[in-house]
Image (cartoon, each protein chain N blue to C red):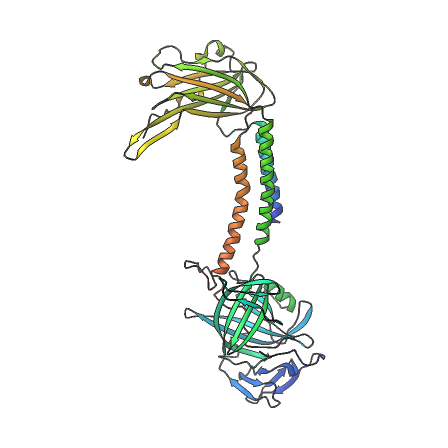
Length: 61
Length: 454
């Protein structure tokens, strides 16, 4: 019983892994935006980056 | 050790006599095979081989001091043979001053002879006297005995005393009689030796569940629940654990094959690389866009690497990967930071001069990057390189899959090991710190004061 459950579980894990690799999934966080205007190419400063308020590391030990 | 089996077979017979001490009726169920019989009214132990039932011993006990779970006279089917419960005794050992008792039942079949059932805390053993001597290896640690090719590990040795008796026995039973007893286990079996003077009796027990005993004797109600892990109780997890590790080995092989396959077939193609300089003191617009590059093949990932010559400084880059044709954008920010120096502990460093990010599931098409760098104006110009690679296998997923496969196998193994730990915590080999979690007390499984076999 436990063995069969593990086999099913393992197959799900392997299937998920294969899908992730084939479809190019990632663990990194990326925001998707739609309909970015073509004018950005001519005027890059017109685009407002989502991450522009990021708090930068200024440390050191 | 008494020898031999019962007298010539015949149909089950019952013989009634009277106790010479109190006159109460005494039933002899095993006829001439009993050596001792106990009067349940006055607790006289009588010589069953003597026609006058000579009194061997009298002991003091309340009539209902210890009631057998299998009432004497009950017939049941044990391993395909009908047996009748004819005798009952309680035996006790003392461990660190604490008495621990278990019960033993004498079963009789006129054709097969005697066998025994023992019970402690709901754990049962079906026991028979051995026909051949096991070989003992007392030099091993722990000592072992070998019988019919099976090795049994020593579990415990103690002195057991008979503390209560009822019914018939194929040996001269006495209350207070004690013997040195040792148990050797190889679940689900246990071999027990019992030494009285120069005489050693060897017996073998096989674990039975209370439900099996109740079914065998058609007893009413439910058996007492078993408490803790018993010395020869078979682990319910050992077979599952072995099977799971076999399955894990299969999955691991598949995992390796998949890794090789994905690594060999991935495009792993560099689609863009550009070198840039950023001077934060420059008052001009810092953002810019790269040349358009093409992403081919199926929907797949894009790995973006940023190498920067940061040295006790940082650079932050607002990235947007934009599809020139559809306007779809992947927006993310990355920081490259590297600090280092010396202090009282010596050299230290934090961060790296390289950063990697994987953009998931990017459809094929024509893309460009919009880049907006930021940095500390006081730290001067930073040179950095942006590299984009298409369809890069992600090792991290294989690591996660390996962990996901390991966790259930590891948990089951831990539970199985814990079961064994609880078993051996009650042995002579318990580690100091072993728990006392309500498991069976350190007792000996089956210790008869002698007895006949078929």
